[in-house]
Structure formats: C-alpha cells, structure tokens
Image (cartoon, rainbow, N blue to C red):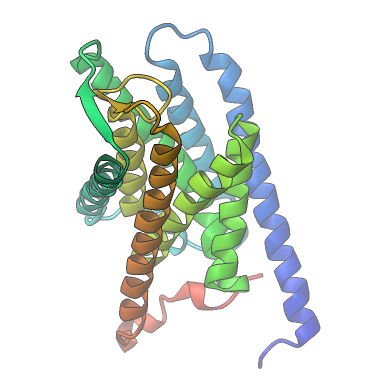
Length: 286
C-alpha cells in the first residue's frame, strides 16, 4: 500500500532533518579539526585536516546508515574491487576537464602558461595526496549519504540542487565570494553528484574531484604557484576572466549532462530477479 500524502510529507521532513544533522556533524568535525592542524609545520596541515575530517565523515556515514537501517553500499561508500579502477577513471576525466578549460582560456583570451620553477617533486606529491584526502572528505560529506537519501525522497535534481547549495555555502563560510562559491563550487557539485549517482559509488567522483583540484593547482588556479602559472596579456584580464568562467560552465555543464545520460542508460538495463531482493534503496526504511 502506498503511503498517504500526509505520510509522505512527514517522511520527507524526517529525511531532511536527518540530512541537516549529518551536514552539521560534518561541519563540526571540520571546525574542530582545523585549529588542531594549524600548528603543524610545512606542507602537511591540509593533508592532516583532510584525513581526519574524512574519517569523521566516514564515521558519521556509518552512524546514519545504521540509523536508517541501510548498508554502506546503498550510499556508495562501500569499497569494492572496481573502486580503484573507477578512481583512476575519475582522475583521468578530471585532468581532461582541467585541460579543456585551460585550452579554452589559452585559445580565446590571450592566456599562456609558463613553468613555475620553484615547485618541486616533494611539494607536488604532498599537494596531490592532500587533494585526494580533501576530496574524500567532501564526497563523503555531500555526495554519499546526503545526496542518496535526498534523491530517494525528493528526486534527482531537487537532491542535486540542495546539496550544491549547501556545498556552495560551505565554501562561502570558508571565505569564498558568493559568486565564485555558487558558480564555481556549486556547479562543480552538480558534476561530482551526477558522477556519484551514475556510478552508484564514490570512487569515481573522488578521483574526479581530486584531479580537478590538483590540475587546477598545477596551473596556478588555487591562489598559489603550481607547476605552471597563467600569464595574461596586458589589458586582457577582464576578457580572460569572462572566457574562463564561460569555459568552466560549458565544460562542467556538458560533463554533468554526460553523466546524466550514462545514468539514464544504466537505468534502462533490467535488474536480474536474483538481485531484486538486494535493492534496499528502493523504498524508505523509516
């Protein structure tokens, strides 16, 4: 028997309440961890922050998944044999997206990239593992339990928008201007979220997210010199920024669409009868 409209509405509010608690818990872990890592010398503070916050987000995921009587696989957080290949695939896709955005800027806005000799192998390696740790934390915090529960109760795009707004709000709290947070992090969240939904796991979006951040850093896009740095011709700064923004929105929008098509194609594949009993995520367990 299908639940009445009032029961469905009540269920949605309970789901939303749990998601809010989960977001607050992840934010609290991050806020408590940040002061502890500020005294760590050298290049390691952000890595330690990402690692501890990732474990915190994972622990909260385990807690909330058990609360909802689900499995870790239902929210894409269970490791599998395909996790490493999917991570590698996501990483390659992320590097491709960075390359496409940089190529658009170079062709259309008089931008060239020159080598930054001050960055060595050690700093590059630490930066890479740092972005992987931070990406694990963000994907667990936003595109695992929260996105999958919201998708089930509110639908795909409503869930995506809610998570993207919260993701942008966290970046605003971290000091980003609202325009950059919304059209940068928020749009990125749609890509990572659609990747998580299409693959029903977090391995590919973690790789994609880490590669995007690492590739952006390599091109000097994180506020510090990477392996290369962008040099804009005099008088072309405004045009370069406009082209960069349009290129980013076009590339990320196209990637979101591609993952959505992947998801739709997979949704049309019939589920074997032997697996139907394991589809715990089809109905709420509240």
